Image 1 (cartoon, rainbow, N blue to C red):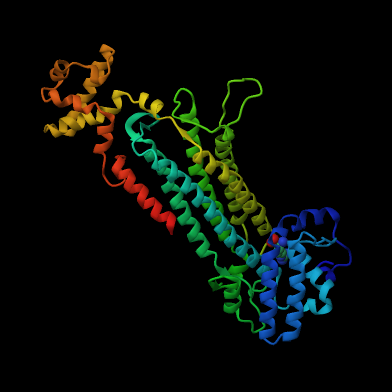
Image 2: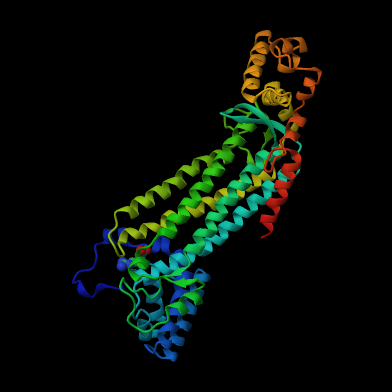
Length: 456
Ligand code: ARG
């Protein structure tokens, strides 16, 4: 039984049905669809459109439909175009004609907007939890490595020493902003569209504020025409997910580089490494490549859906049905990735010695310039002087610390015996104890602040 056959003398073409039907994927909304209908039935009774007894019969019937879905016993019938059709068809089978009163004043347009918002609010909560677990893993590993010195890079070239904790914690804060975006979009999506009808509103005296509150929304939407066609919340989520995945793709890239034997800074646990069918020695980091690769797919979901939205005229258009698969796929992909990324971090082996042996004197060139600044030389000058020192060392095939003091003094008379203190990586890091800096004390404070965020 279709919800709309009356004005046609011929049934739909079978190929059109296959194209048009969304039941294949929108079944996932069954709980939200049924909850929305229960609240709506009671609102119709309160408005005097149906009797209290009729509302109870409908709600009881819906409860049975819910149980059938919950226990995987719901049987789809031919003509179940989407979840809304399927639920109403089954309701009428169970309670009889009175079930036909449920849709009074309602349209699938306000219904699907309500269902999908509610579903997405709950999905946002699940995603929030999964991201918190990843943050907790980062903090756990970082806590043990606030003194583990490693080279820091800019332009992928050795720059200044940092610590493994500082490197890892940088991703904590990216995720913190992602979570902030997630909470903000969840707060924005808490407008309840139910009661907007097909586009113009509801002619029966239903209490939209109460309907919204009962379903767990914060407010009733302000404009019925906007409410039935607004899918900002889907785009918001797809963007938040895309940016979050982009951050994790960068983490994955770091892990791929640092686990390369030429670096050897980290080793992935056997459980999160993969091998080669041909080359017996291989330890590949496929999960990280999948994180990086699937980020492309997630960005694709965002770009694709924005393209769907951009040309739509006012009101509901069937194009909007494309919202669900894009977001379902994005969330499913994230929930495939996140447990693996979290476990990869949790089990990450940090090779402190390999990190230490990658520390080269040139990482201290800035410190050498700062040394001259402390002797009263302007930084512009000292930068130039140390550039000459670097060149002199390269010409002699020596490192900075191997250059004799006499050579340094020939370049700049301000160099003195205490210059040897500069060539200490730990001291270099300790000096960078500004708020948010790489000094062990500053990183420990950073971790304390991060943990306070995890507690809320
Ligand atoms: N399956 C549809 C969707 O997901 C439900 C709304 C259909 N509304 C309509 N007027 N055809 O968007």
